[in-house]
Length: 113
Image (tube, rainbow, N blue to C red; front, side, top):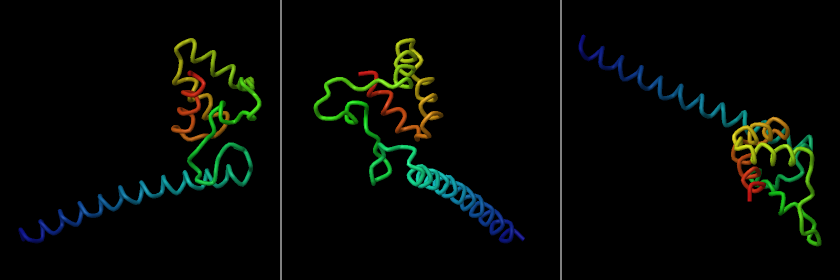
């Protein structure tokens, strides 16, 4: 009887570990689907072929321009940054452009420089 209990506990732990892993893989798959959808729809022209790199405002400039072209969204983000609301700026950018958290944070950080 004791051996059956031990086997049952081990099986339950294994099921739990597998369930956590499947959930993690499902989340990653959903993120990849969103990235592919964004690329197919052309909603972010600044994503390169590695899917993980977003141009900063300075990198997106033509080579002859010295100052970044400020969009309305960039102005809104700069205002939030100046008010000490950097997290709100990241959230706003993610909502507006559908970026990942890292992409949005990197972009906001580049505006803050």
